[in-house]
Length: 459
Image 1: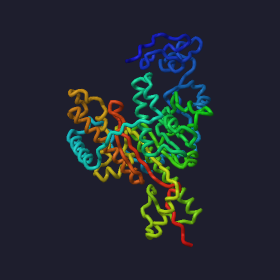
Image 2 (image 1 turned 90 degrees about the horizontal axis):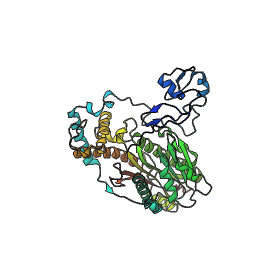
Image 3 (image 1 turned 135 degrees about the horizontal axis):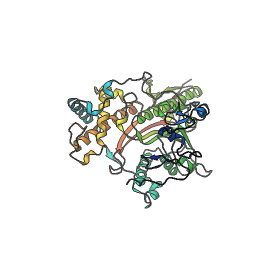
Image 4 (image 1 turned 30 degrees about the vertical axis):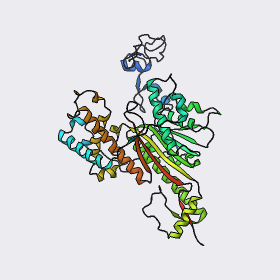
């Protein structure tokens, strides 16, 4: 239900009425003025001082005679980048992909014959490469009290059920463990990290990194600032595309690293997958070099270490390798992600490009598939009379086509993770009435704490 308009203008505040917010502007005004500085300029009201758009961010404007002073403190000003910033490191290729005309046009401009042909291709690929997902709606003991709290509204309860199920999957795959660095991509308020910390009662030497490119209010970080509130949260205000996770200091202080996200939008899911895999590989490579230098041992790549050629050892040496590694405590790295907004994916950043190319699908095909993926959640399935921009497909068949498109995109992501040594499963982690975006990607990587199998030289 829409909020009632606030027609009461506060004293000493701007007299400009904001239609979108259905209230008056709350900015202070100078003595003798009716409007704030922003709306004096927008309304063209005469003023002794001229206001101009800020050259750093045209969304706001400033007094022309105070421009230089404003540029020194503007929130949009360039700032020194941290050591873990690397321009475009998680992009798919150093060569920027330039989309053609067809990659930019809406679904309504594609001929019906092209759409029908693509629907057939998607159905064929779906039947061949996408496995049927089971429903695994889990809970975690630490969240049962809040889930049973009758004061929670419907919207809050939906989010809590999703977070509880993600925690249940983390526990089921052994990813709630000590000395682990938890990285939440697209963290927002950081509620998922908050509940992970609540589930890990006591001091386990864990670290929590929250990555988001925008700041937000009412962050859960505030709950973890007190001395007795457990480990603190490290918030990285950065686009995932430029994050070199392996260079973040607290990542290297933990034995394990687990990436999590809830409803990471479109292209950000691909950037996060590539960011996490690169960090795991870098950590593995560092451990390999350290082990080789200290123990003078021959290194044999294990699961998760990317290598084109594995060293072939005699049976006796392989047996010694297995005996040696059995004496080392194993730990898990993993990635648990609930993707969403597949219509906002882009070919330039998609991790499953080789997977799609193997299916005979290119950038234009991918763009069309992303457009059709919105049919799964667009809401028109409730009426058989709505066919605009949907190429004449009935709502229920159209919804299934959208689901096939989403699952095919996720299949490419699973393929990429498997190529990096992960064991990947997908499931429906909540009911559809909780969220239509109810798919969870769970990837685990079992390694030892040196990330290599070592065979000592006989000499």
